[in-house]
Length: 196
Ligand SMILES: [Zn+2]
Image (cartoon, rainbow, N blue to C red; front, side, top):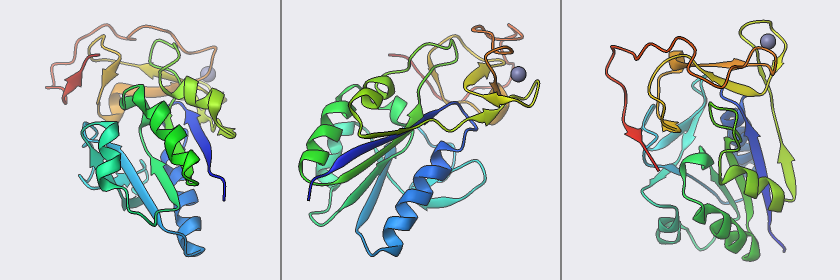
């Protein structure tokens, strides 16, 4: 059987992780062997689980580096999920190609744009090579319309910052501003900041 790549891309609060969990669960109902991985830096919730903001959880193996997946991959895995794909390096693209070539169904969830509204690799490249792309949308916290952007409210100017929920909001195109909204550096100690 031929494998393929699916991408679930969108802003924060668009339900990407929920959708990933749903697809993996449905595969499990069909008795398919599944594995889910996430980048190790994302330890906002439980260390070995993928959790959506509504606390819907499944087991996930945290990876220091994307190529470590080959050490953890079970020989009988048929469906493989990656959450927070934007936090892996660009090598995620080749790993997904290799997994699909082995016949696996590969599902990647991740942010397609950063808080400046710029494409956030490797998700845009994965969207181009994937057989199937979904862009679920969040709700704009300003007007209630559908939202595709992640507005940063406070924190540092780095592209990658694992922040608490209150550092970000979903916004529509009209209400999104590609800058930190209040320009006040939070006095609260931030979670680990990674630059690349
Ligand atoms: Zn709006």
